Amino acid sequence: MTVAAVIVTYNSDISRLQEIFNSLSSCDKVIISDNSTSDKKRTEIKDLSHKSGFDYLSMSGNHGIAKAQNVGITHAVNAGMADVVLLDDDSLPTHTMISELFSARKRFYDELGKLPVVCATAFGDNKEMLSVRGEKIINGVYKCRDIISSGTLLNRSHIDLVGLHEEKLFIDCVDYEWGWRAISKNVIMCIVISAVLNHRLGTGKLNYIDVRYGSPIRHYYQYRNILHMIKRDYVPLSWKLKQLPKLLFKLLLISLFFDNKAKRLKFALMGVRDFCLGKYGPINNC
Image (tube, rainbow, N blue to C red; front, side, top):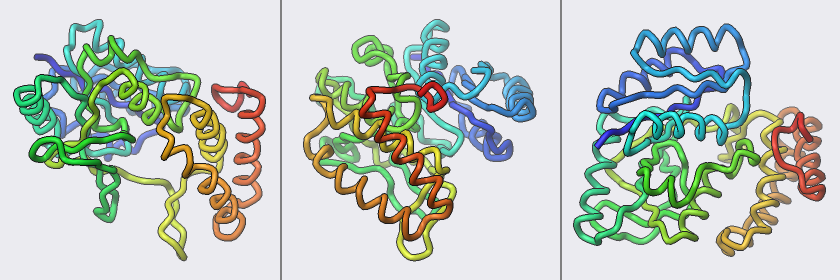
C-alpha cells in the first residue's frame, strides 16, 4: 500500500509547516497544494517543500480549500498512490497518527468486512476535543457524521465512489458536505481515538464566552454555505434544525462582542443575500 499526504497551505507559518513536514516520515509521498496569495510565502513554502523532497503545486492564488485538496488528491492518484491523508497548515499530526489510522482501518475491515473512511481525533490548543464522535463500532473506533477533513484517510475506492470535494463551496462546509455525501453512498465514516491531530482554531477568542472566530470574510462563506446545505436532502435533518438558531444567535454575538462588528455583519448579510441569489464560488465572483 502507498500513501500520500496532501497538505493545503495558505500564507503559512513556516516554522509550523516544518513541524508538520517532520511528522510525515511514514508517507510515500507528500504533496503541498499551495493557496498562498503572497509571492514571498509561495517562495518560502516552495523552497521548504523542495528541500524536504516533497511535491509542490502552486494554485497561483487562493482558489479555496476544496480546489486545492482536489488538485492534490488528483496528483496523488496519478502518481499511483492507493491512499491519501488530508492535512492543512493549521493541523499538526502526531508521529503515529497515520499508522494508527491504517491500523484501525485494517482492524475494522478484518472484523466487519468493510473499508471505512477513518479520521483522526482533533484536539484544540487548550486540549479540548474538537471531533464529535458517535456510537462505538469496534474498540477505539467510533462512528462519525460531521468530519474534519484534516486528518482524514481516504482510499482510492472512496474517491472513485464519492467523487472529489465540491469546489464551488470554496471553504466552509467543504468537509461536512463530502462526508455527508459519502454516507449517502453507504460509506462508513469513523473516528480513531488513538490517531491524534492537534488543530488550531480561529484567530480570535471572546473574553466573555468560549467562542473562537476567524477573519470577517469567513462569515460570508459560513452563512451562504450553511444555508445552501440546509436545502440538500442528504444533509442530516438534526444538523439542519440547529443551524438557523445558531446563525441568528451568531449575529447577536457579532453585534455585542466581536471586533470589526460592522464588517462582520456586512459579510454575513452578503452571504444570506448570495444564498438567496443561488450564488457559489469565491466572494469576488459574486
